[in-house]
Length: 375
Image (cartoon, rainbow, N blue to C red; front, side, top):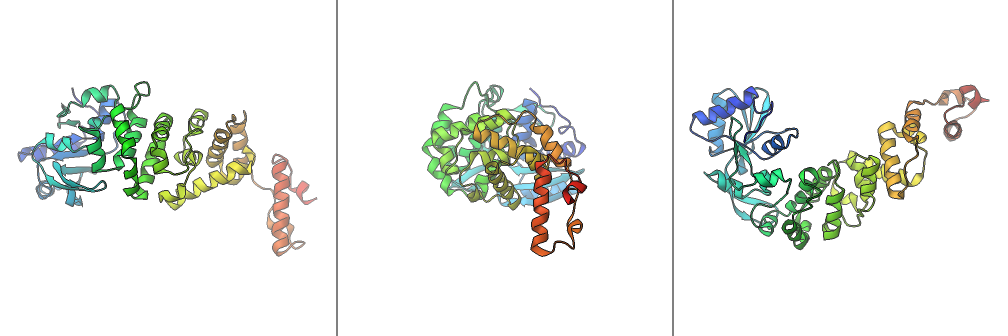
């Protein structure tokens, strides 16, 4: 079996692989690029595993005129920019010591050793520079079945890094077969070790929620998190019941989906922009502004997110014409300005009068003219 794709045949990618191979080292694509290529999904990042040590990788890359950056040198990773494309090149590794968050590693010489430390069998697939698949752990059947399964003993993999609990559900949401359901052994191990989530930084937990809720339909994964106690451990106070409704209504924004879940979102250490969006969605869900007014005040995209989030949380379909109303509001412009009210109104009175007239104009369906408002 071979992987295919434009990324595989990129001139820089092939030149880098051939340079490593010419010096007697292995150059194997690994992880997401192999998994996604086999599934027919987009490939965004190119990771290469090799038995060459980081300094050797750097020397070979620079000899070819490529730029080598030691982005993760302690863990054996060098980012090589070859003909404008970035490649994460990492030396084969073995875990020496783990504490549930970080691992101390040593370099290895065999691809099977490198594969054994990975999280899921579908991520332990490799491919040579010609695309030929290398499957040291027999993970290909799992990928074909869209079965997310831990490498080796699930409990051991989890206690090496408790973030793998959340990754288990995230990968199921993206790549799992809903009809097959979650792997029973993996689910049981996640539930049994859910207390380990407390050891994770809230930034890492927040990043996983962003990726999980960005999946086309994360409903089953999140429902399984709730049933197994994982959701409560990761996001106290969250409720998964409205999420499938939101997905059914077409809510795609992960911020909107997170707002629908509720819970202590402020503890996730999200960016200020993301947290501000979620806070606004939650506030406006209860304000009950019309879709048209939402469009006028917040723009079409945010108005759509608020409208669908509200419908999901109230378990009521959104208004039939909500999209048209949102667009109507988003394209509307208040026909008067503060200057039109001066000098009759000044200071606080000016602001109050302008807001009152704006409310009248919105209530009219944006129909009142400047003359109407100033009459």
